[in-house]
Structure formats: C-alpha cells, structure tokens
Length: 269
Picture 1 (tube, rainbow, N blue to C red):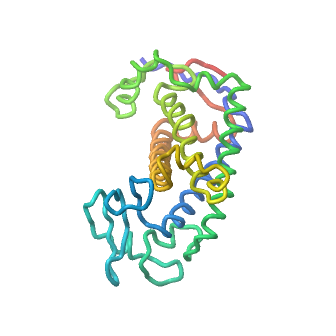
Picture 2: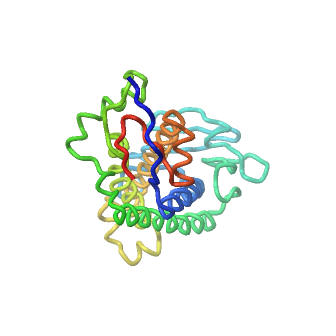
Picture 3: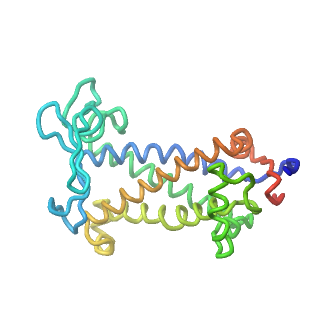
C-alpha cells in the first residue's frame, strides 16, 4: 500500500541550484555553437587525421538543392534538415546544420569558437561548484553508484517504464540517478572537457600530448562529439524523468531547494 508523502526537506543548496540552471543555459549554447563549429568541417573520422576511408559521419550537399547525411558509408537524403539548409540569413545553402539551431546563425567559425570556449568555461565552473557543494554537504558519496546498487537498476527502470508498481527502496538518489551521476558527471563530462581542450588550437600548441592521448586530432574530435551526444541523451532522459516522476515536486526542489520525498525514499535532508 502506498504510504503518505513525507514532510518536505531542504535538499538543494543555493549554490547547487544556481550551478544547475546556469549549466543548463551553458549546455544549450555549447551544443548550438558546437554545431556551428562542426559546419566548418562536416564530417567525423575514426583516424589520427582526415581520412575519407575511415569516415564515420559526413553531412554534404552533393549538388545544388540536395542535402545528404552518410553514417558508416550509408547515405540518406536529408534536404532541408541537414546538408542543404537554412543559411541563417533567410536563404538556403550547402550547410551541415541549419542557421536556426546554431550560434551564431550566419556562418562564422571564429565567432562559433568564441561562444563555445566562453560557455565551456562557464559549464566547467558550474560542474566544479556542484561537486564542491555536494562534497561539503556530505551528499557526494550518496550520488555515486555502489556495487550494492547494481541489483536495483533493472527494478528501478521497470518502475519508470510502468512495468512495476513501486520502485525499490532507496535513499536520496535512486540507483538509476546514481548510475547517471557517476557515468555522466565523472566520466563523460570530463571526457568532453579534455577532448575539447585538445581541439583548441591554443591548448593544442601548448600541450600537444593531449591529441596524442586520444589518437590524433580527428579521433579527439570524434570522442568529443560522441561524448556530447551522450550528454544530450542524458538531458532528454533527465527531462523525461522530471516530467513523469512528480514534475511540480522536482521543479520546486530545483527552484526553492525544498523537496518532498516519496514514501519509498528515506527522509534525508
């Protein structure tokens, strides 16, 4: 039988909430400006240097008015969406991603890099602030996945998919949240940051070993985009969970800090 909702607790500090919302803005800008940068060389190669024979992804305009996208050698017509798209100035042109989704809208590699670098540092600062705040409040250990949580991963997923009436008992963070925070916060996000630094011309000039570690500039670029793709997927899953697991309660907690635990959670401040 479902228990009663527990009293609200103040779960998220001001630093955590500010870091969360500023990171959201920075992330959106990073994705948009990253697509603008990609437009300068609209392909990804699994190689130490540009190599069409080892091309993983390419977005092209083989002729006027036609856009195509190739993934592992298989080509799809994507006119109007990818390859032949909005030029950011009211027209159409050969361009991988359309102007309406990139920052800046009109093509400018230099401006795209400026936006990307600036908000990359903003996102990194938010991540550091979040980690420090969580550590000082004693929450960081609760956010990491432990071996004992592994057996609860599928039951928790089954609950989200409505295949199970109740979630497995858990503390402040459920096992799927712990898995996400561990993998995204301490593996994928650092990977994106380091590969991004390796792609920066200034950083590459000072620390060329970074590109060597990742197998060359093109491999670093591939890992950077794969990591960003994983982050985008995480954001979609995160939004889905917020929408389906008590939207008002979740939003209130990230705006005011106050959260009302469900009957399956331990009432932890």
